[in-house]
Each structure stands twice: as C-alpha cells, then as structure tokens.
Image (cartoon, rainbow, N blue to C red; front, side, top):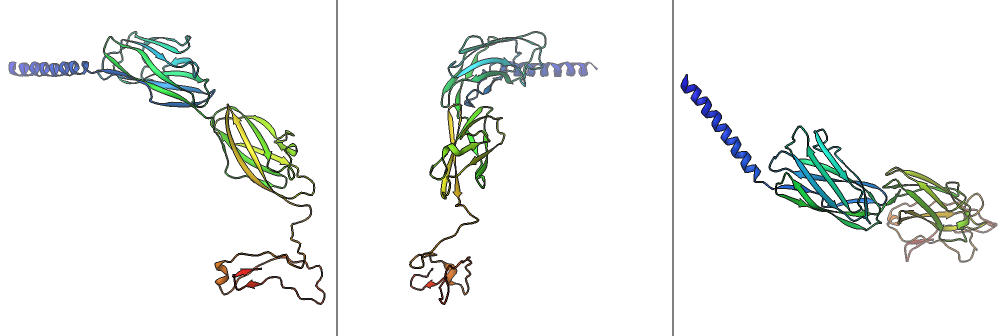
Length: 323
C-alpha cells in the first residue's frame, strides 16, 4: 500500500515538474503585436483595421498599454472596439482615446478573470479622408504587455479609387438607351453624357433619367446595380452613327463608358438608292462562295424596268467578289 502511495505521489511530482518546465520555456517566448501589412479603402468610407496579439508565452494578460500612430491627413480615428475579438466577452477594464489627431491610445487591464490566449485583440476604427493614392503608415510606437519583452509588426493603409463599373452592354431602343452601373461604396455619383457628333445628337437634347439635362447626380449603395435611362432627340432629318460617352465621377475618381447609337433617317426603314450607272455594293471574297450553293437575300424596288432587264447580283470571277 505504501508503495502505491509513493508511486502516486512520485507521478504527481513528475507531472508537476514537467508542467512547470513547459511554463518556464514558454515564458521565454517573445510576444508580438501585429497590424495587417496593407489595408485599402475608398475615400469617405469607414475602415476597420484589426490588431492581433500573438501571446506566444501563454502569459496571463494583466495589462496592455498601446500607442498607434497614423497620418491624420489620410485617416480620422473614430474609435476602438473589442467586437469579435478574444477579449470581447472577458472581464477587462478598457480606456481608449482617439481625440488627438494622428495617435490612438489604448489601455487594457484585468479585473477578475485572466485571459491567457492569443488572437485578434482590437479593432482600430477610422474614416478615410484622403484622396485616391494617398498612403499612411500605421505604426505601434509604444507596446507594453505585463512588462514582458514585446515586438511589433507595423502596417500601412492606402486610399483606393471609388471605382464605377458599367455593365458591358446597354439596351438600345428608338431614341433611348438603358444601362447599368455599380459603385464600390455608398457615395454620390455624377453622370455626364456627351455626344460625339452634335450634328446628329446635340448634348442639349440628351436627358438623363428624365432630368432634362445631360448631367445628373445619384446617391448609390455599395455594390448595388443602378439602372439609368437616357433619352435623346436626334437632329431633324439627320442619320448616321454617333457615340455617346458616359462619364461617372465619384470622390474625384472618374470612369467612362461609350455606347454606339445608330440614328436612323425618317420613314419606315432604310434603303440604298442607286443612280443606275456606277453605284454598286461589293461583297468581299469569301470561302462561302466555294460551296455549290450560296444564297443572298435583298429587297428591291425598281423605279423603271420597262422593256429592260437588270442584273441585281453577279460574280466577278477574277476577284471572286460579288456585286
């Protein structure tokens, strides 16, 4: 019986020694605060940048003191939150200060339960005030963790264009086109539509979504399709091909899309008038002509065919072209 008790106590002693040894080994590890290497967002939009604690020593988190610096000409700090972090449901006292432009102060102290894990620690909340292409470093200038040695990994932020994406095609009807576009953020978008040929369609005759003008503004929801109808009045008795260019501007970022429109002449349909002497339509040589049979269809309205035969289509053997 004594031998069993001795063996039991000896086993507990060995296990305790092993656990203590592991804790001592992990206490030598260096803990790290990390920011994402690169974060992007459009102008005027909110952005949340996560800060991660790699608690490699599995130490009890008793106290954290951080100072995070950024460029106040690019970002405005709006707060710090624990939403979705490892400390969200833990019993900790917090004090966050974002009132000084260019720096965020964050202090966290244990109250009752002590957390010993690792992971997503804080959310740094900002609003983007810079313009497309602006960048700023996000740096941790002060990092304290239970008076343990702590290293940091800093990050950066870049303002990206508030891109307007047009649908690849448009529905084109008589004197109207309908197209769709989306924007990557909740912003006000200005649309201007211009004609390449005012002798066919003048800019003053273009109306965007019933505005009576070739210019209009729209407030859009991020990544939500926005349908636009454009009406135009061609110049009287004019006909031909014209290009309508749609220019979308949002927060200084500009996108364009072009749509080709055929302005038809007045009347029921289009036709070619031949002078009866040397007017021709020539169809280039094609491998289709090498088959035994080929079919061409056309409507013909002769003006004068009395006592006269007319050739409507013929094959030029020297070039293999059809006329």
